Image (tube, rainbow over all chains, first blue to last red):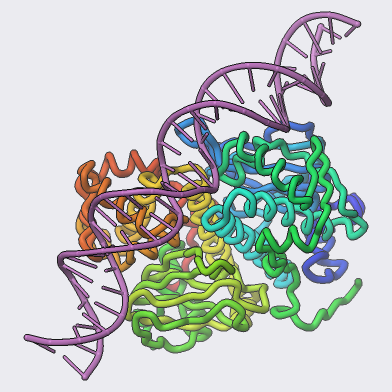
Length: 251
Length: 251
DNA sequence: AGATTCTAATAACCTATGTTATAAAACCTT
DNA sequence: AAGGTTTTATAACATAGGTTATTAGAATCT
């Protein structure tokens, strides 16, 4: 497997430059990539948790089913994201994960994370940062669910996804594919799908954005960011503050 | 500083037994304990983030202020908890932290965490587990905010705190002090304080619990757990799955 | 191409929760 | 003990968002 094919190496490079030996270590621990189709299940609530995944192509989401038949979407995962990190010390999955589109994932056994801890401080720091960043995204979602109305919530979720996509593809324009049904928006935002529909209509009438099937077109980026109460800080991904000198042997 | 005085050593022991050398390493990196009074600020949104804290006595909470004047409470911290872990790789604080009661905290510089990564795999795993467990608590809160009504939300929050307190003090009875105003409940649950008041009245009328000032008395533990949709799994704190053999030199 | 299923838009109606106001306790300060 | 502040309870009223139903357009299947 070449470095280009390794999901995890590419993702870790966002955080800090890696030496050749670190790249090799990561690649040696990762299992080969697996293709999955839309709607395929990575795992379900209650399954034994023994590995995490990196998603190198396609989208996925995690969710919890509620007793009353509803569900809460917890994360939306984009290419490059790490899935299942929070279950590292847990015996069983507490949320299910399903593909939103066709895609490719690599599985990475929990035991191998401990090998990383033993062999590379830099990689350990990166794992730790990713976990912290995921916490930050969850707290931002908490604010979104707790203290914003449907209009602001929806604007915020679209804008967050827009920002995250732009980090993956800096050439991304104001119009892009977003393969999330209104039901997924509803389950992520704690709303009904009917009200999500109303809200997208309202966002269009306000000339903020158009959602047509799975395509989003942002009409007024600045104003959208502002009504969403969005500030990008929580998406930061760098280790400069912690590992200032990049003492790299082989780049 | 003796082992008994170290906040962090005591907390880490919940996760895995520690060898004498590991305890010593932790203690050497931690700064001395500091006493704080109720309402004192540990830090505010926007402050530079250079250390985390362990809270060895007293309660605290973290929050984000929203532009419209409201705020979202993100965590409630109890004795033994680690505060500020998610900001490890961030330059600045994205949430403020304030004491709810008088208490004692120990500060622990971020740089020292990297020393831990270099010197103890077991301690690294524990840090990682704590971060994962905090993520789990945040996802549970997400479900609470997104998919439960005020009655269930409030029941859930009380029950979670009850469970966490019981882990600290197994002798805790069904009646205990809970130094959270209804405004704090409101800001944590995404409700208005008026509705929190109504909800506690309703919980009393349903014979589930009584809240009198800062004292909670649980009247029907089983039914409270059930209406809250509570399941304790997300509070798990053990490393058995990851570090099975406790190969301890000096216990 | 026709049948079927999924997804979305919109309307009519309902309810949980927000808002504002008031007053009583509890608590804090002097 | 008096006076101020914070916390809580409750009522009256307003509204954001939920629920159910209907219809239509896309997407998928045969």
